[in-house]
Image (cartoon, rainbow, N blue to C red; front, side, top):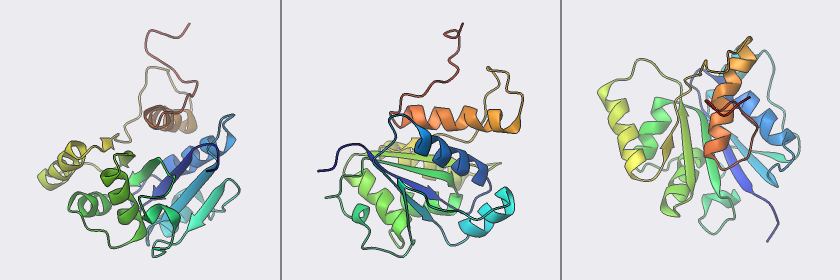
Length: 190
């Protein structure tokens, strides 16, 4: 087996591509970066990424881009070595399909694999306001073992730029994913 972590980052059609862009940049530049970062875009995510970031996504090693209909991707099976999946941003449509056990594309299948294999699944919803269906779907996923980490930036570190504000969410997600990242920690920073 190859050394190092193998993770999946799924980008869905919710607003918030900047979170995914910064997450992928941080993952790719970390000293202890994952051996492989598999990236999947939902059907609408690429257009939203382009609209919100002003550029198309380009995969650079250790990133490998998979099509959302590619059920031959290694992480479509529980026998793969992928240990963590981060869905960022997570649309309410994807959240609902995963909560309902619908595996009709690679994103939902990979999420189903993470849950059934008791591996780490982190959803970063960027939706407001939430209706009762959204809340119940997130409850279902939480009870199934997923981590729901809303894209709610923090202000403890007194961010001065949009990127610094975005990084408060990205660093929290990476910490939840088991990565050791330097970040502001309340009452622990000098």
